[in-house]
Length: 253
Image 1 (spheres, helix red, strand yellow):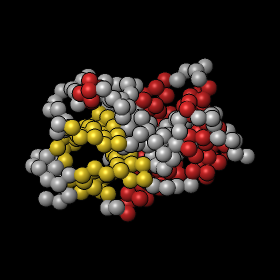
Image 2: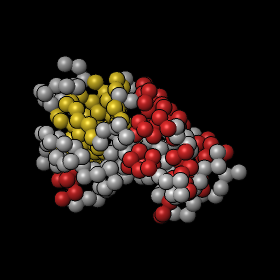
Image 3: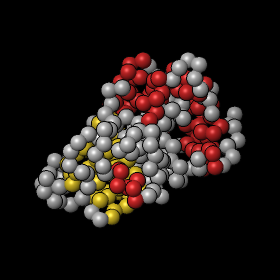
């Protein structure tokens, strides 16, 4: 049996520079497969390019909340949402509707379930400081996940906060955010190591990898394109602090 490395990324949010840095790092680590937990678009300036890159690089993409609601944004909707919607091509918006809401795989005898936000909905958040009931809900069979054996490992994104916890034989891991990390400013993704498709116990590991990149170059793109909320976006990229918790960074000329 051969142990392989699988990269799992999430929440790129139109940040092409961060995505390219993460993909390049994954190549140097011998990653054989890349899986994507959604929220490729919104907040950042280059959703269209990010979607194309993810479609090319990722074996599976799970639908995020932005892929779920953004194509349905009306013309008279929130102005920044309209901008991010219109930055995408029609075929990309149509593709979002075909994306699965969850994905299961077998790795070293463990059933691994991939979600964007939670087993309840792509719009229901589960934070690091969750309740026991919220933890149980992440492993439950729901209308979103479908029936089937309960996973032993659940991997998700959405909250932009990377962590791993294991309790009573169950592991919950958040991969953090590639394009908009809100635990620290450095993009982060996860690598799973194990034997793909094996029902038998074998070595298994989860690790987070932080990859530096040129955030100022990506911020400059946002201003050059006239992206709405560019000041708030710049503040988040520079500080790793959610815009509702800190003053926005000064505008870049």
